[in-house]
Image 1 (cartoon, rainbow, N blue to C red):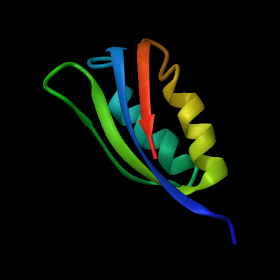
Image 2 (image 1 turned 90 degrees about the vertical axis):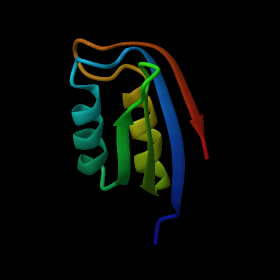
Image 3 (image 1 turned 30 degrees about the vertical axis):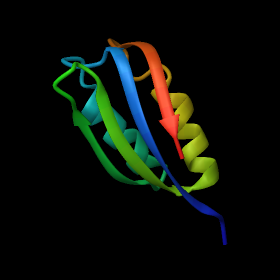
Length: 79
């Protein structure tokens, strides 16, 4: 059985109005992760993802660039 972990994340840059939230949800689901993602009033996107460690690692890499029209300037991740 693979280890399950969770992580909180916050992404800043051009991440609202470019389908980042919907794309992040799809990217997490495709990796078997569960959680939530939301636009924040300060212009960032924040969320929580839980699942196998390897899938979280892949998702973290994805968060570092996001969808096509996003521009990630900073990614903060906490276990």
